[in-house]
Length: 188
Image 1 (cartoon, one colour):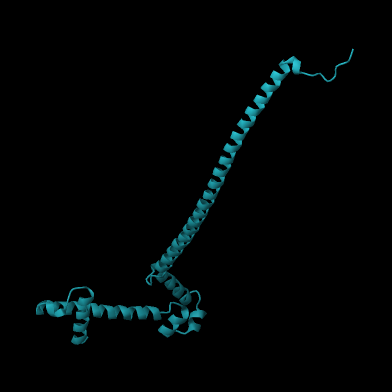
Image 2: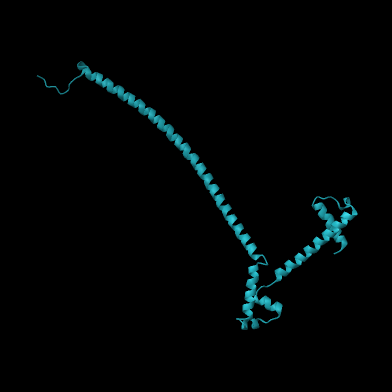
């Protein structure tokens, strides 16, 4: 790796991390930064190569036959030996999850579960808000009925008072015999 690239990368990282300009540091510290950055650049490059190799790896019979120069017909003509061995090794590697496929699948499943939970929570919140609004309408209607009931109760009391007064007046009139006229009296 060229020294200029390392110096440029180090200066850029120092600014990115808020550690100031490269020129602020002593020459010895600068060299240590360069050594550390070179280490990281080399490891990044190696990781990129490994990822590319992983992406290009074919863990299937066709890919294995191609990479090992063993013909597919040889593998398929020996289903109880070579083919079985390849299939068992593929399964063994997948079980080890060296490629982190299962971890990604589990993470994706968990994300899907969380998204489903959030969708349900949003729907529950909307339904709760709708019920709250509906409850408000019902409360207004209940208050209106309650007021109407009070008015009807007051009107009933007034009618009962008038009825009682009319009954008293009727009794008083009946008690005064002079004022009572009999309609079905026989004339003698």
